[in-house]
Structures are given as structure tokens and as C-alpha cells.
Image (cartoon, rainbow, N blue to C red; front, side):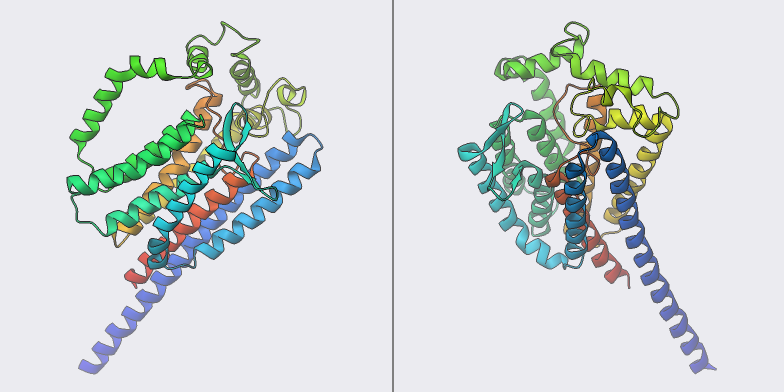
Length: 378
């Protein structure tokens, strides 16, 4: 009878392990499936925005296939390997940012592109994923709560890319990267009194910061406060974006029937302002579908962070998830006139190979961390 009971407990434990493994696999498939659906929506919008430019659509499709390949390749890596290469990747990205300042290609008023003849990309996009992984790797080898010396070292890792990117000048991306780094440190236990001191210092120094801004950056802020002051100049982008969003109604005008974009009133409708195209052609309903997918992905990724078994997997998942979330939020807030226009693309939706590849690289790291947690669960 005793042997039968032991065997029954062993069988139930085995079944529990198998069900846990199956559940983990289902969750992996679910996340990757959600990402693929998200990318398909972006391809549909880009097909409309391209206005017959099939080369643009094909090129973005190739980028998507390469990015999905990177996703599946990276999610097979062990967290120990990711932790070892994190700082090397950080140093390599810093070197690329320095090269941008020396020989970078200037576009849209900023020297942010690195042109290697066979490929042109933005190293600042790489830092959005590399920075939280590097901070997670450093914190993994440090005791919590962080000592003053360890905290200073981590803050320097955040400050260095911020200064290099702000020098391009690309203050919007630099601020986002600094925010990603600070959020990762908050998850690591950054004292709230330091956050309070930082916010106070930012408010006190804001008049001085205003004098350090470039003229076009000041104009963007003034356009946000008074968008109707120059509707044919600095306020043109945001006014046309609001018109496109408002004219979509509940169900939109239909795919390929967006008048603001197809009549060339809405600028950058295949990159920064592609959300306005979505609102015009698919309406409030289409926006809700995209937001539902976005929140589903974000909640799933943060749940992986909560289930993590060590500091590295927890912070890496949280930092990368936050990077995806903050970039999406800023793009939507930008095109709806809630914040100044800062030139941040909508991840996995806007046209651009660098953002697509780096975003799915980040999700590959999240999947790798999730596999590590599932192994511990088993």
C-alpha cells in the first residue's frame, strides 16, 4: 500500500511537471503569436502608407523575417551566456555611438545614423535593449540594496549613452534611454529618496535647461503649448495628425481610403505618424484592437519578470518590457498632441529595419529569461 501511495505521488508530480512545461510552451507560443499579429498589423498599415511603393513593403517584410529569425535564435540562448556578453555588447554600442558623432550620417536635423554602405542603422536604438540587460547583469553580481559605489557605477552606465545621444542632438531618444535605465535601477531597489531628489533637481534646473536647448527643440515645446500659432509651419505636423485621427470616427474610412495620408496632407505617415493613419482608416475600433494587443504583450512580459528566479532575469525582462511600453506610449502621445514631436517610431508598426530588429531582439531575450524561469519551476 505504501509503495502504491509513493508511486501515485510520483506520477502526480510527473504530471504536474509535464503540465507546467506544456503551459510554459503555450505561453511562449502565445507571446510570439501576439508579436506576429502585431507585425502583420504594421505591414497592413505600411501597405496603405506606401501608396504603391512595393519596394518599401517588401523591404519591411524582409526586415520582419530577419527579426523573427533573431527572435527565435536569441530565445534559445542561456541567461548565463546573455549575462556574460551584456557588458561587451554595451561597450560595442558605446563605440558605435562615438562613431556616429565622428562620421555619422545626418538626417532629420540630427547626426544619428551610421552608414556602413551595405547597411544604415541607428546605434541609439540598440542601446534601448542593451542598457537594461547590462544593468541587470551588473546588479546580478552586486548585493542588494545597492551600495553607494555600486549605485554610482550603474548611474554612470546610464549617463554615458545619454550624453552621447544628446550630443547628436537627439534629446528625445536620449531621455527615453535614461528613463529606461532609471526604471531598471528602480526595479533593483533604487532608494525613493534619490528619485525625489532627482525630480526636485530637474524642476529647479528647468530654467537653466531651457537655455541649453537647441532652437528647434524650443520650437517643438512652444508648438505643443500653442499649436495653432503656426499651423502652416512648426504646428503643421500635429494639426494634420489630429485632423486624421478625428476624421476616422468609430470604424474609420477603410483600408486605403485615408484622405489625409493619401492626399499628402499627413507627413511621415509611414514612420512617426503611422498611428494617425491607423486611426483614420480603422477608427477608434482599430486603435482599441492595437492597444489591446499592446497591453496583452506588455502584461505577459511583466508577468515573466515577476516569475523570474534571479535578479538578472527579473531586471532584464522588466527593463526591456518598459522600453517597448515607453516607446509606444511616447509615439501615441506625440501624434495626439500630448507631448512635443520627438521623432520616436511606433515599435513593430512604423517603417524601419533597425527598430524592428532591435525590438524583436529584446523579446528574444525576454523569452530566454522565461525559459530559465520555467527550468527552475520544473
